[in-house]
Image (cartoon, rainbow, N blue to C red):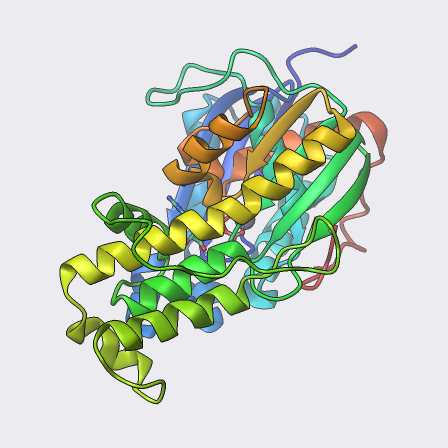
Length: 356
Ligand code: KG4
Ligand code: ZN
């Protein structure tokens, strides 16, 4: 088998312009992520037009930096991989156009990658000489139970092999990260809300407010819209107002202690739902490993609860590889290159609504 295969991965599905070089599907040579998040904060969420404009400005410098950090020039790159969906159309378009153009210009095979699937591959990165990463020594084993928890997705997936998987369940409404972001907004914190809610939750009492865990028809499905509404009602009641009280005025009325207790009660309940289903799926399928990936996998509450409920240690990517990055795209591209053919750059198009 070929060794020292270097793949350049490009990611631009949401607000991060990212590129990375990964060798042999596990060694991280560079990982450059530029987020436009500060430009969206004033609007309470990602503004697609702002994200797209920022990708246009950032894409070339980010790719150049990823090559430089890896000590590579174009001649050292064996193949490229790019996110073609799901995501924001304008954002995806910039990354895909850049990848197509560069693949044609430098005559590199190009692989198209599904962003949601790729989150799992972040857990396959096991070595680097870059500073500041804490990586697992072993890569996960198949069959693999994957829990993908991000701002757009909440899915439990059973992978028999790299290219052979079955979705066991998914959210029927909001994604868990979206619920974090909405609760953060109620409590007066900007997007992305996950980290602020978890920070607040640390000083709160998670037993203070009783919040409902959703019942779903599918055994492994999830639902978060009811929990989000329950948080809104709880906040209104906590300040002695009725359910007509506007949500954007809640943050200034709630005390610091009330906010912390709401954050802690929400986080415990939101995470419990994930852990309940992952533990049940583990019992039923007895996979060789469990991988938790996507932005919400950075949650300390998720890591704590999962450790208490699973009989094996789950694989969590390094925090820097939990949120969107090019390394997971390059790694997914590496495994794809083993089993599939590259795409014709002239025919590759974006798929904003792509599912797994
Ligand atoms: O995977 P990701 O970077 O982008 C998507 O593909 O959606 O995930 C972003 C999501 C946001 O909803 C953010 O609030 C959430 O991940 N998140 C967290 C934490 N860090 C990011 N949620 C809970 N705890 C965290 N520490
Ligand atoms: Zn993502």
